Every structure is written in C-alpha cells, then in structure tokens.
Length: 153
Ligand SMILES: [Zn+2]
Image 1 (cartoon, rainbow, N blue to C red):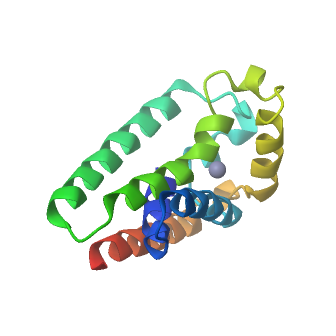
Image 2 (spheres, rainbow, N blue to C red):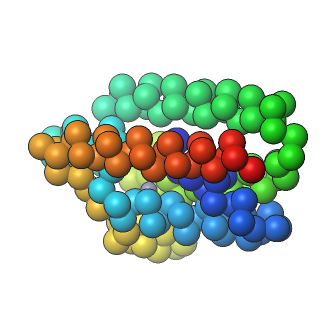
C-alpha cells in the first residue's frame, strides 16, 4: 500500500477531493515508473501476473497497517483535512484495485479496464531481481518521505 500513503501525502497540496483523487492517480503512475521493491519482484518471471497466494496475504497485511496508520493520524493530527487524505489514498490505490482485481484476466478485456491496464503497464517499471536491495532503499526513502510529509503538516 505504499501508493495509498504517497497519494495521501501528495494530496496535501490540493484543496478539493476531486483534485486529491487525481493527484493520487498521478503519483501512482510516477511511483510505478521508479523501479521499487514489491512482491512481484520475486516471482514475476515464474508466475507473470498470476500471483501466488502469499502475495494476497502480504497485501492484506499492508492494508491493515495502512488503515491503522491513517486512524492514528486521524486522532493525532486534527489539523489535516481528512477527506483529502482519504481521496488521495483512494486515488493512489485505484489503479491497482482496478488493474489487479481478482478477476483481472477477464476484466482486462473490458473497455476502460483495458485502457487502464495498458497505461499502467506502460508506466510500471519492474525492478531487476538482483537489484532488490536498491529497490528496498528507494522504497524506504519514498515511504519515509510520504510519512514525514503527513506528520509534518
Ligand atoms: Zn501500479
């Protein structure tokens, strides 16, 4: 769920939910363009887009942690416009939710889904597996930056 945090952080520059959502989408594509560590780094060659089951468990864990962080933020940073955070996070998640839904093999044939898949694929750069530590450092830096931004304002 790094995308949710980045989208939420970037949404702080916006003033309306619509803009926050849009900024979330844009940061998703930008961040995908930077080769970062993600579960598929370790299995893409073997499985392609048919994710092994542990990936869904991993995503679920990330999801819970992100929710906990947002709840904590809600109670400890009342200065935030929370609707912007939520819309920014949703914008950040939207592309993956649409393009990696459990029925993606079918939905990617549909109009709209197909175009989103092509755009997503164009922007998404895979990290070479032997460079995973480089991707990890990058991920920590970017995530740290996003969390720092959310805590700062
Ligand atoms: Zn993505």
